Image (tube, rainbow over all chains, first blue to last red):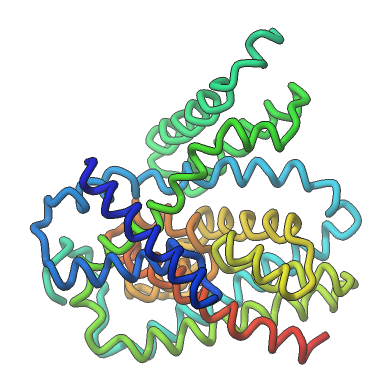
Length: 125
Length: 231
């Protein structure tokens, strides 16, 4: 667990340094994600390596990490009062359009290699 | 009562407890879409914060430990992606096309709809980046001249919407490719949507996490251009 955490935080740190040095408009942890992917591809550790076990422990609870930010909606709800209907309709409408465009395009363009069953991870399509 | 409210650990315990209750509710209801632990926990904790008249800033301070884990957890999304790397073969171009188109449509629709419904420019600028992960949404909103706290609120709401309704809407649209379903939810509902997809299906979780990263990049590149054209 400690070794896994060290890899995750290490990649995040390097990602943050890359962002600070180059000014790319994405968060440090996203660069860290790409870095860790490269590390995993290069080193190809076994499926129960420390990094895998740490990720498998944290990721099922990803939703928990957004709860404090979500509670913040209450603090700013007052700002929205006058435009509540416009905000809600625009939010739901643009969310739906974005979801549908990505889903339909990816589904149709990727027709040839479609993944539709419920496979176990790691097996080829 | 005030001795309890002064405990720095109180809100950490309350937040974890409310989330735990959300997990229990999800299992009890056979994973009903509305029983998303994030939604249950936010409603419960927000109600308690309002009832006890606690300042949001001090709540955020007391729960900073939870928010801190978002960084390493985002890095950890590389693991499910690595496991699904074989499924990227022959899908890279469709994936990049879909995510880029999604970023353009999402920003254009948000700005267009707000203006159509009588919202002002500030509101439109604040809502433009709402499909991306919260730190990017806030940074892009700042660049666009929006109101970052407002952006944070609509971004979180877009995330919850994806966790609650994303998979059902995709099934209604007859989108069954697990890669396309993951990409769609990650593109429209960032980390909160990804949080559900990871629990639902390994391929959907992996592609959702990937879409979240790519959408952050695409939106920060195209949003300033689109907003300048539209406003």
